[in-house]
Amino acid sequence: MRKKRQLIPKAVKERVYHRQKGTCACCLERGERYHHVVAVAFCKYKPHSFDKNVVLLCRYHHDSFHLGDPDTFQSIYEYVWYLYHHKLPEEQDIIDISNQVVDIIKEDIDKRDQYFLE
Image (cartoon, rainbow, N blue to C red; front, side):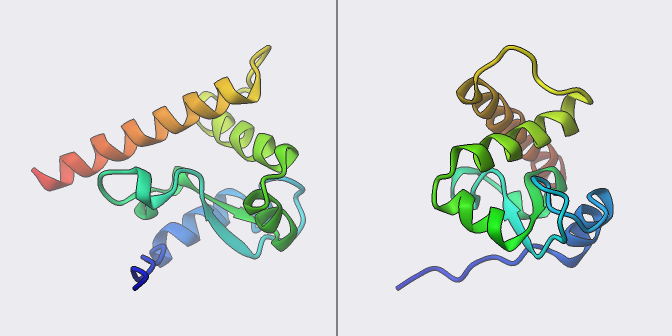
């Protein structure tokens, strides 16, 4: 039996929507779907409640990500890199960028949620 999916809280969706002005993180078309950068299964606590782990995507880029499109994958991870560093990554391949982004998000989520659990 499948586990029930945890919903992204409305407050997180509102922050993400506002941050991205309602547009897709990849193409700037109208965003329709919220997407976890680091999947819920890979974090100890509540990654669905952390707005830097959620991006708004158009239907095309959401589906493309799940189909493994490398250009979509790169766009999403570069966008999240920008959220953290306020600049685009230079001279790094996408594997390095994605690994660093995943590590940063997981660390942020764990620190944030650990604080609330104490």
